[in-house]
Image (cartoon, protein in one colour):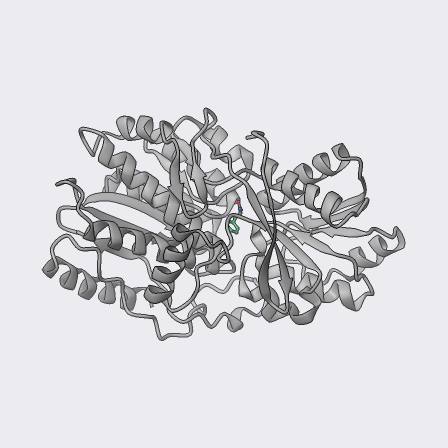
Length: 419
Ligand code: PHE
């Protein structure tokens, strides 16, 4: 499978070379089963019938382009995250490659698939840094994987920009590690405020996968904020690795009569959780974080996902021209509307390219780092991005309600600067 992808990529590169500096040539949609390769856990992933998928390889000007690395899970249990991010990055580079960059350098994107596995991150980053000599790295989505990648990039003095890892510790790994999204302190606050003020709930129970750094952090930050607002957290309970049956936890929580459940898991568990909660007679609102952003939540949970809400980075219903033009371009390019992962990655890569374009020597990683740190007022599709002194972006979160699988924008929560 890998071999086939490589051939497709080589063909794509030949086409690209012919088209000079334009960013064209991602491989055509993979017609294989898309997911058989690395299906570790992750429930019945067969449902993920996305229209086109993207594979690892070299994109762009592979001859003379400045090398930028990217690592994402393009296969594996949370492959939607990586797929959507990589597609948006390729789109952004195609658009920027076609634009007039005042004679600035062209780029090559070296995209690697970490299969959503912790053990893949080190070898991939070492290859990108030492063999490919990348000047910057974009990735990961999942906080647990960015927490592994960050220290490696830091050690080698290579700027790493996670477009969407929200766990606060990610950027605490050192001055070379950035994110262009909000943190889980901000997101936890947004969820708590929405639950307390808009849903008018007072007694929360929190259930989350205890092997996921993102979930553990977000559970904690939600609790702090909810209690601060005057609410009560009657239970906060982790579930085990690969657990698919939440019956015991749900029954115990039910006896305590909460009026809201906060469930900061990823989308591959969210639909299953909602479905089991409703079957056990828990009909109260369920609130989640950005990990819920996938059609799979509804595909698995169906009508059980009504009365569910989650925080996110942007809404495609946002009528601003920047968002609408992105939604249009992405949909035209990839045959599906962009998720929040796509939106955050689109902003992340454009910030990286802008930083590289602003320095005298585009291979000077320290100068690129400084340029990233100076990012201010960047008009992204996920809002205006200014990198603060902790290398985080401070932005509002949107709250989306699932209504028959539709993600309906119901609130925007301005976050205080909590980093
Ligand atoms: N914020 C999540 C994490 O840090 C990942 C994520 C990003 C989920 C974007 C959905 C959308 O692990």
